[in-house]
Amino acid sequence: MPEALTFQGRIQRARFRAWHRGTREADYMFGGFFDRYHGEWKGEELTWFEALLEEDDVDVMAWALGTQPVPPRFQGELIERMMLLDYVDIPR
Image (cartoon, rainbow, N blue to C red):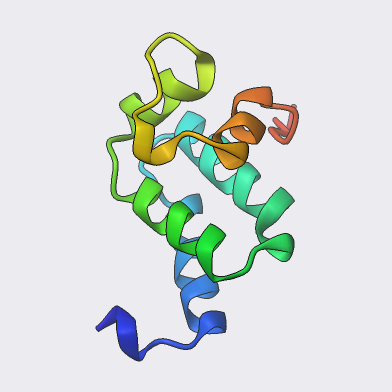
C-alpha cells in the first residue's frame, strides 16, 4: 500500500531497496546514488527513483554507463547525475 506511506516512510523503503539489489555492483550504484542525492529530493524525484527501482538492474546500469539509451520516462537531470558515477564509493 504505497499510498499509505508517508514521505519519510517512502524514503526508508527506497533506501532499503537501493542497498539490497542482489549484487554488490548494483548496490553501489543504486545505494550510492540514493545516499548522495536523497536529501535534496521532493516528491517528484522520489517517485522517479521508486520507478527506477522497479527496473532491471542490468538495464539501469547500462543506461548509467551509457551503453544503452535511456528510455524517455527516465531522461532528465537525475539520470544525468547517475551517469556521472562520481557518487560510487567502493571500499578497498
